[in-house]
Image (tube, rainbow, N blue to C red; front, side, top):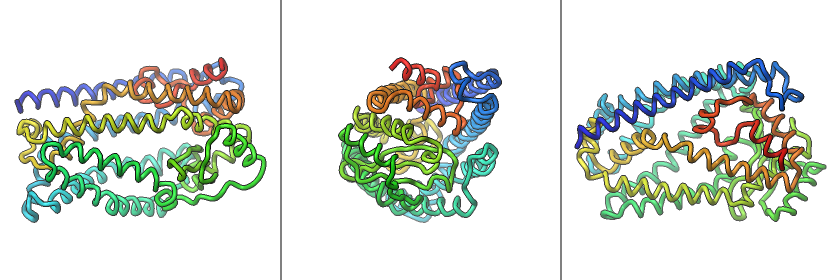
Length: 414
């Protein structure tokens, strides 16, 4: 059985890696071939230079993703068949009781640190080279380091207690531990959604109340029409990290708040900002957030149940050259292997997300008019250097938002 699982895993890893590489190469070719021709529907709003910048920016990100793809596959093989997971396990067994929580925490920390060190050069290159080359990066080395330290601190303060709870439940709740872990994990995620706007997000950005004026009046009128009650309208200093613009609402219940990037407010007129917010409120009106939470809950329950069936199977570990089992090792191994087997169903998740975007666009057209939303989207495509000509298959797998041409066509028909 272990030999069969080895062949299945290696075949799926090869298939997934090859598929992702092929999609990336398709994206590169498709975007570069159309680099010098602005699509007709955008020709009056996007200049040839802006279109070429978007093509070059997309190509640069895709090339980097190709390199990361190869490195990630190599790291996964190093963890499994290369014996790195077994080496970490043996290292900490020499210091801690193999059945104890300290061993589990140390094992998770080792894997996390190894993954962080491998990914750090890509993060640095993306921030200080790629994003800077196209005029988007505003991050200083000091701010980057400060963010990194805060993230590590939050991981330790929040992640370690959660992991301890999970490991305890896995060992103490018998054969149905996965049900208790799922309940705990779901409750934790809902708690984070509740606390993120007021406790976590302000650690990284400054949030100021939206100033009085035409924009605030329009937004408050829109909220009244849509029946949306929030804890406030805020402007986030996104410009200290990036030139990209965005808007979102976060939290739930009385903790809901609407947040605008300062870069967005600088680029869009009040009517366009209203249209962008109407789109976000469309997600609220159609309960997309709760639908996604429900889907996430169902999938996580299924995955935890599956882990419950695998955790005591020797072939699950031996098939990828991991010498010892245990709750921590099972959880780590399952987390590492799962993406290899689930990537082929990515188009389904992307399709659902794009469907939600179309529904939110339709709602925005009713509440604020499609013309202002079209104008806002074209500006955002231009200012964020988003390609107008993605490869259809690449988009099918990866894009959570519809391609620009499809989205604008839907809005015009509305």
